[in-house]
Image 1: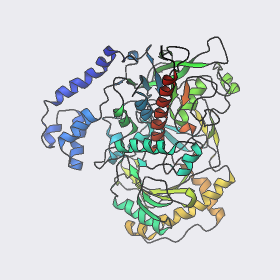
Image 2 (image 1 turned 120 degrees about the vertical axis):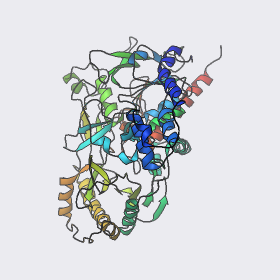
Image 3 (image 1 turned 90 degrees about the horizontal axis):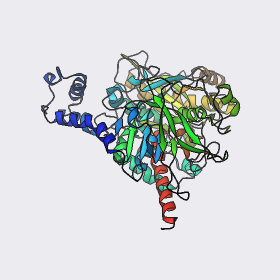
Length: 571
């Protein structure tokens, strides 16, 4: 495989070399207010981090200019338009980044991300600004994109390199053994993939006073045994891993791209994929993905660009794939925009029909969440992502506590719980042919009676934690004992207060849209590798398993290609 165009690489790297040159002339002494003056917003940010955390100026500056820089990123779509690659990964999110990094070990890869870079953005990178990115959102450029399901529940999705790992609470926990068994994954390979991720971005958190209180509250409420620090998904109370390091810096899945082969990968930012390009070779039953058509995320729908897959050298060798890793909303949306889905729905939007896969956009699920505020009034506390989790018997419920930002100068302290295995499911449909617009999605929260019964049971556990002695003592209030006693009261509370835990999944599920190798049924050279393929949300938080899945599937594809190459006759 030839290296990617040298001229392209020089253009992408030019700005990085200039920054490194300037870096050599900076005064690398300890932080002082004078160093930030007249040096621009970036240095003000650096200086404020130093003052807040007592970190040496050299360390912070290095992280901004070197650690955070990826020499193969560009926002200039003309640099990739018309070019060909062995693999095209659509979506630089939680699964897409490790997938692209892995594939680049042996093949050329184009990674397409609709958002920008997380590097240099304190709202993404700094723990003290946790939650700020969810407050200020806009239609096309904010790192978090709001959407409200037709159920009326507000939600959001990541729109930045790193995806939702750049805006979430950073809690890292593996999937249960049962989940891995159901998925049919090889356990040793799964373990190796998890370990690869963890060696690069996962830290052991140091509990804050509030997280310690939550920990004791969970134990008092009966979430036993106490498991201490563990990455495994096990019953009881545990401290999970974190993608925030000891200095409070977030390490998103974008950091996994540092393991990529820089000579084999290009990351195009602020580019939104409009649709997949297909070819049939004169045989309608042999539809193949040929490439992608995309636009600038802040540009016009009328100005499109294309990138293509390299063609196999001969008819006996396998080519690469277009791989959708755009998330539980993005991947089914792109399939529908490309003409893969229910014929009637596509005809209503004048989208040419390619493949009648009725499962696209179906089996959408979101874990219903109920939260109880334990503080009496809004305060201006330091935001805190959850570090401790209570996992109920049979893994039915997950309970965590944190401090969330509700405005730029106000926080609240919720104890929140989610139903781990909801029975209710909904559907995703297109609202528009503009890929930047959110699709319409309905999750049908608590629509199934089993979910409503489970929610009533969950509220009992939630109240035990929220009204526990440790929580009351920490807040300096009298412990309340006025718990909801009737099931009808609890069910009513659930219906009126259901929210999202941001762990929605489905839309391209295995067995319905993709096979066990994550290949889209009926289309050659097209896969989906992300949370849209899940029929349930894994573990305490799906982030760890999505990162693992990107690495796991990337390695599996490499092994498949090696096997095919070794079995071909030599000339």
